[in-house]
Image 1 (cartoon, helix red, strand yellow):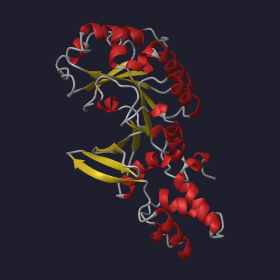
Image 2 (image 1 turned 135 degrees about the horizontal axis):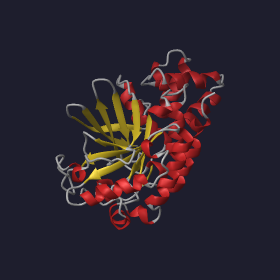
Image 3 (image 1 turned 45 degrees about the vertical axis):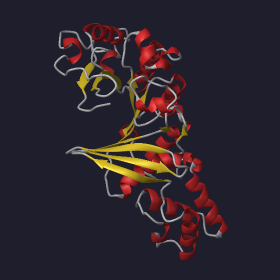
Image 4 (image 1 turned 135 degrees about the vertical axis):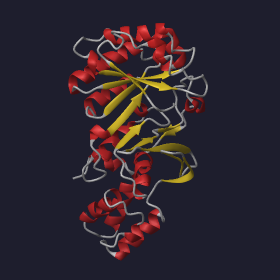
Length: 329
């Protein structure tokens, strides 16, 4: 049996209804799902292992494409392929495939727009239009897989706040179901600004996915300005939930920190961030991994030579670790 989360898929509901109307056996549903999610068949008419009349009914109902979205624009660089998807209602979201010598990583969107208005994020200026559906979430992955890409990790780090969309939790179950996408939960990454109800739910329902907390300032007043949701869910309370997650899983938690020149890259910021990590229970500190991310649009990027106020001094990580990401926000 596939995970019950698939029942929230409009595609699944349509398939089940057509199979039942055609008086076909229920096992045809499993065959069709395997063709879509495992074989990556691109058309219902190509599912030759099911009766022709059923293939035609499916094609007539869903149309020529299996996907709930289409690629409206594609741009490529040395290692990145960015796709602008258009959903059936005309709304648009982005996904980015990053190709490395040893693996491929896909970053997907979770919402059309975003409600949280982080000051350095272009998506936040749009405001929240709506949550992506379960199919719109997983079809971003399916699109690249249909093209033959072997995706090693999937990150909900594109447009929107993942933990504010209930369908993201369902998508994680669908993606990790061995009878559907078959992606290990340990290869799924979630990035959040710290939505506590969603974070607590993630701890309960999806403990094995990887988590990144977008912090960007260790000072309350400044984070209130950079990440306004801090006024609702203060980062001190978020860290308590992160502590719980580490105790539960023994897994590392990433603390994402976008470096903006003259804004949050001073020695004072570095020292205060160390204090925040040091304030965590001693046995948990080493599992907090700070990820420094250069930024290059609304604010100037912090110079790499500065590296956060010359943090390369004894005790700088408070038992945690530090990484300079070779990427831009």
